[in-house]
Every structure is written in C-alpha cells, then in structure tokens.
Amino acid sequence: MNAPTNLPGSESTSAIPSPLDLQPTLLISSLRTVVPAGGCTIDALVRVQAPVQPATSLLAPRQPLRLSVVVDRSGSMSGEPLNEALRCVNHIASRLQPTDQIAVVLYDSHVQLPVPLQPANATTVQRALAGVESGGNTALFDGWHAGVDQLLGITAGQLGLEVPSHVPSGSLSRVILLSDGQANNGVTEPLEIAKHCAKALTQGVSTTTVGLGRGFNEDLMIGMARSGGGQQYYGQTAEDLYDNFDEELALLQSLYLRQLHLKLTPADGVIVEPLGVVEAMPNGQYRLSDLAWGAESWLLVRLHVGPATVGMQKALLAATLTAQVQQGAKTAAATVQPSIWHFPMLTLPVVVDADWHGAAKDETVANRALEVAFGEQAALARGLLMRGRVADAERLFAALEPQVAHHPWLQNKLSSLRELARRDADMAAKELRFSHMKMSKRAVALNEASVQFCVGETDSTEIPAFLRRKMSEGKGRKTPTPDPK
Image (cartoon, rainbow, N blue to C red; front, side, top):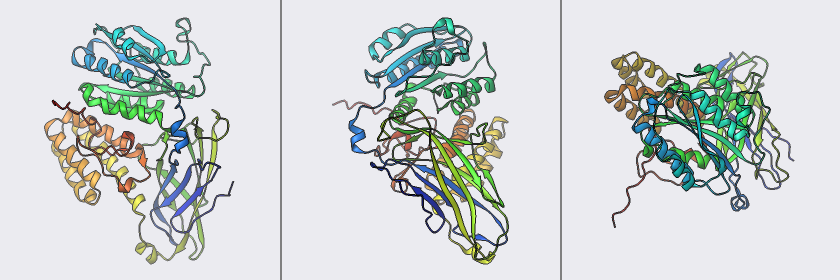
C-alpha cells in the first residue's frame, strides 16, 4: 500500500489504493487555505468517502437482510394510524427477496408475534396481519425488545435476560419500529430506551423508527434511531412513507462501511469543537452515519487555533476512523472485526492577519457549515412554535432568508417550513425537529454539485433515494397514479 500523502492547499487527504481500489478516501478540509499569526477560529470538514461500487460487486448476490418490523397496535393507534402502519408492513415485505428474512411483532399492553423470523414472503405477511385491531396501552419498549430478540435468536424463555448474542455474520439486521411513540407501559423513560438501542447496536442489531400520525413523540423516536444507528422518518399515511421505506431498503442494500467511529486528534495549541448534532461515544470518539457506496459521511468541527509564527506550517488536526467493512467491500475474506484508517494531519501555512481576511473560502465547507447552522436555527424555531410563539418563529424565518439566499436547497426548504408553520404549527414543529437532525447527519452524494435537490413529485431518480436532498423530511415522493390507459 502507498503511504498517505498531504496535498497542498486547504485539504489533507489520503486515498489508500488496494488491488480493486476499494479503500475509502479520507479528507479534512478547512474553510480557508491559511491561518493568521494572531490565531483564529476556523471551520473544518472531516469526510469519509466511499468508492463507486464496482461492476463485479453489483453482479454478486447482495447481503441478506434480516428485518424485524415492530408495529404499535395500542389504543392510541386506533383507526388510520394502525391501518397505514399495516399497509407499510406489507409494502416492506413486498420489497424483500426470498433470501431475506422478516419477522413481524405487534404490541399494545402485551406483545404478539404473528410472523416469527422466517424467509420473506409477502403473502404470508399479508395473511398474518389480516384483521388486526387496536387496543390497550403502549408497551413500546417490550415490542421493540421482542423485535431485537427475534434477530438475536433469543427464545421466549430468555426474554429479559442478559444473553451475549450477536447476529449471524454476513447479514444486515435491523428493527423497524412503527409507532406514535406514546410509551405508557413498562419502560417509558426515553434515555433508558435509547441506552438499550445502543446496546443492541453493539450486538449487530440497528434500529430505525417511523413516527405515525400527528401526535407521535418525535423526541423519543429520534432518540431511539440515533442511539440505535438507524434512520428516522415520519408521515401520516402509507403513501407518505413508501418512499422512505424504499430509501431505507436501498441504503441497507448499498452499505460499504458500518459503525463508523471517528477519533479527533488536535495538534498543540488547537481546541476542537464538534458542530451540529453529534453522537459522542463513551471513549471520546464520534459516531458517523453508515456509509454507502459512492457516498460521503462527515462531521463538521470548529478549530480554535492559537497564535503562531508567520511562514511556518501550522499543524491543526488529524483523525482516525474505525469501521466495519461490509461483505463485498474487501477483496479477501470478509470480517466483522473493525478496520482502522488514519487521516493525515491537516497542516496550513501561517500568514499575517491581513492576508487571512482576504483568503478565499472553500465552497463545500462553507455550504456544509451553513446547513449545520440552519439546523440549529430550525431547533430554535421549533422551540418557539411549541411555546405558541408563531410570530417570533416567523421573524426568525425572515432573518434566515438573506443567509440562505445563495443556497438553493436551504432557500426552498425555508420557504416550505414557513408555509407549513403558518397553516399547521404542530406538524411544523415535528418537521423542524427532523430537519435539525438531517442538517448534521445526511448522506452526501459524491457528485452532489451536479445533482438537483428534490422539489416535487417528479423529482429525478438518477441517484439513490437516501442521497436525495428533500424539501420536506416528513414525506417522500407519492406513489404515481396509474395511467388509466
């Protein structure tokens, strides 16, 4: 292997070739190409880029999926929410292959298992769910736990015990929870539930959550997905969510690296401040989003740099990535043991302060920083709406307009949020919560500069669904109406 090299300018880069060129590209990019002698605060973007999936890998059988779809059938889901949830389950089952496995768990005050983990068959799932009705309280944790147990192979007699189980190697295991998130039976504390989601992730089972209806608890549902290493979606009807489920399955089928843990190592005289929504690990590392082929996972940081001497090369930041390589992403025997890659140190020349102020800015770093800042403002607007201060939220939106004037995606997103807040403050608060998350966690296409963001039902499908920049996080593209001809 070639040794990592530092390239000149604002970027520290490492591209480690292999026989099939399947290694990730590691980048640390700073907002400016220099730092001033008097010290400064400067944003930097730490990125992990996956190669484009090779044709030989596309022809090979993909990794089997093992899904536990957990459905809330409690009294609060009565009527449309439950009906739409069951339609969603049937949609998921119809998208799986016979080599995949699916379990379906229902819960109210108690847990039912109409479909134990078995090879995917849409007809079997549909028949098992016929006639399901709502009733009872919401033992959300018990239902989710039963879904995890199916994937870990834990029998009913072992429920609740500390069993050192893990999922089979060479497969992807995920719980997909559909609920209004109104937990009121058994374990209900959000932080406690999130802790269990994090533990399941260490055993190989991730968690995706789907909020249904108007009254779902977005904080609980997002917290579970964050700790569980999955995605978070919401909608009111099955049609709202079909695109999200297609996005979820496409992502699972395209994964290159999982469980990405990033360790940041600042140089002497530098303090690192992660920005936006970050997932700090107990060991001081940060967890990045799972990485798909041809995509980028990232973390934005702010570097507080002390004074230095003009003319010297100032070391700023290095990083180490630990991640699990998915089957097919290595040329030799696949392994579940983490692989480790090292970013080279970001180093910039020191200039007089006047030259610092005139230095050009890196457009990618500037745009990503604007998105993260937009997300933080979205969180503030949500707080205002939840306190009934709609006029104050509108003033905040108005103040954001000039800031996003040169960022078409954010400009259109802001317009959509303002319109939603005017007509439905409750749903706007939920949309703002999900937008806050998306701004710091979204997967990025490698060719994003040439890709249009999504603005309607006729959006381009040239890139995978999980890489599209949507104007609204709460709804996907609706299923096209069949041609009457």
